[in-house]
Image (tube, rainbow, N blue to C red; front, side, top):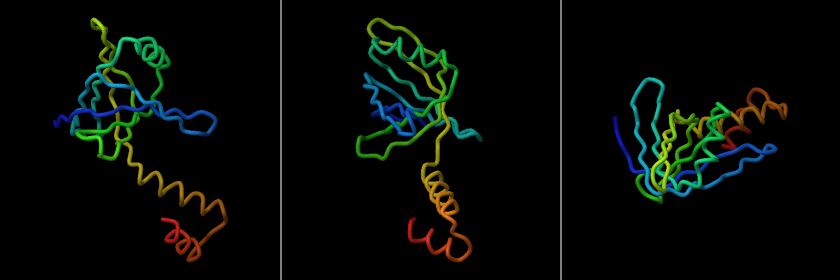
Length: 136
């Protein structure tokens, strides 16, 4: 397993077909690559206790959600994860939230969306290939 410093954490929510990015201010955090066959990562976020209600409500929904995390340094590109909450632990002035997530290959998703759009627009065969090359 490999452990990295968690620099920033954002929650991605789909509202009316628009992605809303909500920054979750960190007190501290780690992210651990479990290096398993399912590409699981454990994200540990130490947060202000004010977020306890928010994450408890999110946990009660029992649904997966997307998180975006920057690792090691602020200039790194964020990684996107499909997550669930493992646990929420109350501390003095903070809460510790453990997430289990699977890394999402955003480039693959963007390519698939572009291809689907072109097919929906009626492109086929060589014309599809040419238009795909132009857009990607």
